[in-house]
Image (tube, rainbow, N blue to C red; front, side):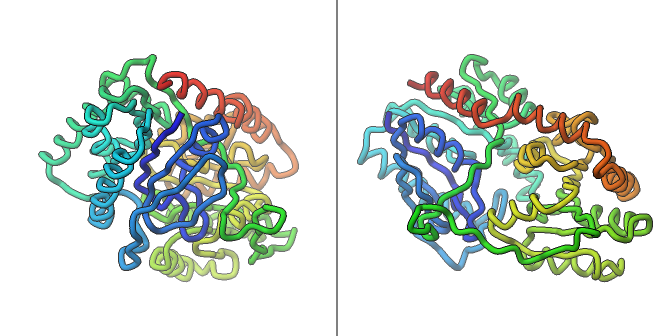
Length: 393
């Protein structure tokens, strides 16, 4: 089978952070699918047999490309449409795998080029318009809703990434036999073409921050968008240090502007000596931080999509503190992590409980690992991808 994957993403960010489309393409390529993957001009290429990356032109002045809808992405998507049409004219693809907003133009092209369409739904696009404050126009949001529902019903297969989106898609009229819930739950090592050694292994970045064994480290790694709750986490950590002054916190990620804002809060709360911000780092270094930390935290304030990092945190063998919101609780419960309310006092209590249990109770950690192996491990993921390919074969 030859497939075109249309992913309006860098595919790999300049620092080597993989987008979930990478893992879809990796496993499908392993199943023998020949893939042409169309992505933005920025980013880094990877080494995956049976995968060819095609990029639109790079516009450096638009970088970095923000998360969510933006005028920058709208401009780039014009080129994505043109390149999609050109590839469809040049090659006879049996299947087109459209990620996020790419489904809009792929849905329009489907009857012309007669391919089978997979809609990889990572979020509700009309909800994104509201959540990212792209527009307040009720008419525009309603128009996107109508278009999205049309795409859901027209697709030959629909992938959703969490139970909330599954329910959304089924309520919109998707045939259950054409739907698969495939969580973004695997995180294999990645081989970047630009940084391979002679043996083909990926070069690893050296750790930049070392903490003494006497100082247990609480780690947050991810984006610093407002909904992630980083400010609440810092406020909670200020309360933690009153009872556990030996504790340290490491905040990994964020743009320069976002890091500057959080650092100001750290300064105000006099946490400079115990709270470290790294800015954006490579995936390899982020994984090293996870391995060296004692407690992991996901302080998200609201949302419906399960964060990608949750699955890695479940598999980490480290205690996890997460907020009791639907983004988390559709996967997590009190048996596998410390669930807290999204406010400083409750979060502080959860962090202290996790620190107090270090070396004592491993029930939650063991249950988390068992949950991951049972529901989200690579063999489970591969089985779902094979089912997807059978649907569109």
